[in-house]
Amino acid sequence: MNLDAAQNGWPAFLGTFGSESPLLDQVRSYRRVLAQAKHPQDVVDECLRWCTCDWLSVVVADTDEEAWANAATARAEHLTIRQRFIERNGPIEGPVMHRKAGQSNAAAFAAGGDMSDVIAGNPDTVAAQVRALADVGINHLLVRFLGEWTGATRHISETSMRLFAREIIPRFKDIAPLRDPLALDLDSVSA
Image 1 (cartoon, rainbow, N blue to C red):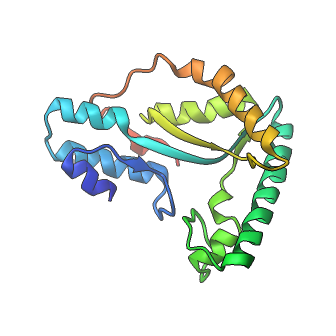
Image 2 (cartoon, rainbow, N blue to C red):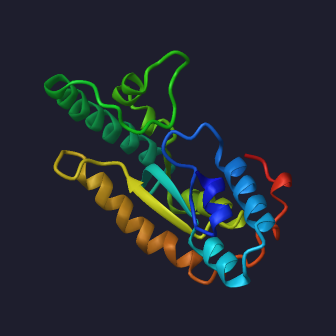
């Protein structure tokens, strides 16, 4: 799908929803095909400006230790709520980022496979992870904070959002989008 987007001159969601390919592989492939498609510069600019990465399961706290403890608490509550829903309504074929060999998508979703890659830490730790994405040209993040809005872990989500907005976003406000899809040597970046 991302290669079709590049060929058609469309921005893409990268690193999302059950992709078998790691984020950097997706970025490399998308940019290579975008360059090969020979779109006008304004189309390339728009694609590079609006390609988006979806971050699931993010927790920001004052310390790394607190963030990881909050992540475990919020994930546990989310899985309890999900399990109750499944018991009432049956298996869900939801989006899953990771599943074990032979595991169905529904079983992986029930087990929290979509929350296996938690991003947690203090503002400096999380900002370093945002910086790594910015360094490979990712300009837009959809951030999903752990914590059930109607549950006991709402405060975890609220704290994460406030810290992210106050401490992390301002560090990246002046980063200009790439103009050349091949400007970065992504082969030298480790996944």
